[in-house]
Length: 464
Image 1 (spheres, rainbow, N blue to C red):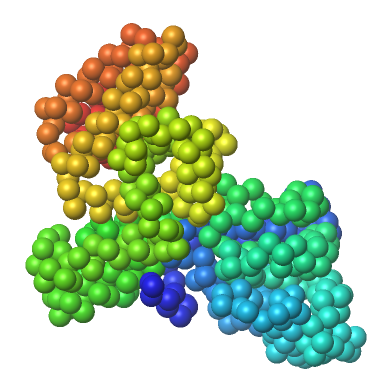
Image 2 (cartoon, rainbow, N blue to C red):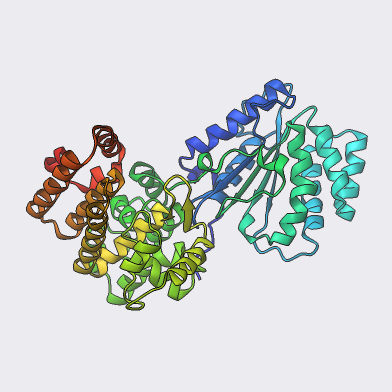
């Protein structure tokens, strides 16, 4: 089991500028228009892998937008101030769940709004609190939305069963969303597949609400607040910007080395047992709940940024000499059920592993056996090269991935001469086999692919 999410602390909250901007924008539109408009998207579904910071984000929103909050930076006008109600599904076993949500949200509203409630609202909320009657709660919130901008914050939605969600969505979320005057923010490890059409069309598209890892700059800020003597660059190497992982590793390293400044070889200076524990923590956190056999497959797929049946068969030859299409498809569909880790990308028309998870696994693989890591990336490069040679029209996508895998080999071996020769060959393939249109697209793709750029030494980036 992994460490629980630490309690939210305002002074330790870092980043989330993009997510806060999304929320601010919707509140502004509701506060200014205060009618249902096509520009308002009153449902935001923040999602991301374990430890990425969703819970802290919702607690921060609660802190900012609760009625009368002294820390509020809410953009709503004085005419339409905000109120925020927070409910977490984590560990909730109370049945029926909808009644428990109703009582909790009603209690929260009464405590927060007390003197601002009308007599009717007080009666409705008191009845909702006592009986769990969702209709009373909805009527009271809709009444309050005439004078305030309410935010309904629902956390840990991945723990809600489909049966319970089938009741919550039409009874709570849909009537509030239809008003266009209440902002509903849900957070979980995967995007919610809303069933109701009117709910789906009022939800911000998932691509805009994906909560991602911190970059090195914000990881440094986070570590400086938690364990100031620890090298944030070292922590980032293992956490890849996952805030919960960063917190665990920084504090553990600080404890193990007695507060001394940690150098990049921190793992090697610790006792062997501690080093193994530190090496295991990142993958155990992000892959908690994933079955052992599937973890093994994920490890072998981790060198790939995208994959389908053919790629799984090649990279997972250790399973069997001949894997059938139906078996590979079942494996991919099972992995896709852990959609916070693996999901189908409609644009790529392929499965992808979450970028942060993939990089964490890659770092573990490099530490364990850099030669095996390089071999896996050479295998992937050769796979794309074979596909390119067999295709009557070479795809620029294949060539981009060939460059990625060459850069990953260099990351493990540090052999710049080998990289220069191989990358020159791939570049020549692009220049001679791509049509002018595809070549232009390839070059634009390379310019925007920071992951590949960062894998290549600056002296060889001219080959990209």
